[in-house]
Image (spheres, rainbow, N blue to C red):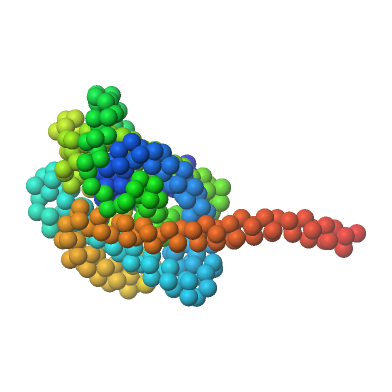
Length: 368
């Protein structure tokens, strides 16, 4: 099913270093206690709606990069401002992913941070030289396995937890967050992840020939992301006192289940981190040179090299700084995209459908 392929690729874009590791959940939802749980439920709608909208726009404009959409929906000034912001976002999140890769392998295997970072950027470069359709296939390949393992870990943790909400809420609210309250945090979280994934999500729609399938894939992918957010946050809420101090709380949770579960989880987290690094750094590079051009390999190499150098700022610190900043800026961009989607993909499509019968009737009249 092509819908499933698109949905899993969308999930693969969103599930990156902070998401798969649980570090984003700690800072954005768990730290707000029971209100954070309400925020995660709202995320199902946010991601489902924008998954539908963004992938649909990509299909409508046959996009292979975000510029293929922006040039049709924005004037030159707005186009340029959004373009620069998205490029900075793609690269900034790429740096976070590379840092997360090193932190993941360090926590599980004791590898030096630099080695994990290097493995991540090397894989980005190698896979980035493939055909665009193959890159899309790879991005979504590991998502089903991580989803399955998250479901297993969450089920075990949630069924064995002592559900004294007052105690759990007290423990959770001791954690720190860079955001002021739960509802701004919820909106910011949706914004940062969707802004990060928008360029690659456009591509998912752009390479799909059937609009209905593109829309369904984006919607299903967004809903799956939202449900995963709910499950991961509930699991962290129930075990915050045991895992919150780690850079990779979900990995620690898996290790508490069984050491071998932690081993599998660390591998899957690494590949989901790499998935997001792959999508954002590939999209960033393709904004300057088309992937089918010979010079693309040199641009991609330069991009991953700089990302590697900047990734040594510390995973948790980088998330706490980069994500909120991207999220606040993303509010305006996502709002603009919804307006542009309605104006171009909905209103114009409806207008064209209204015109078609009139043209046909005129043709029939002429024939008569």
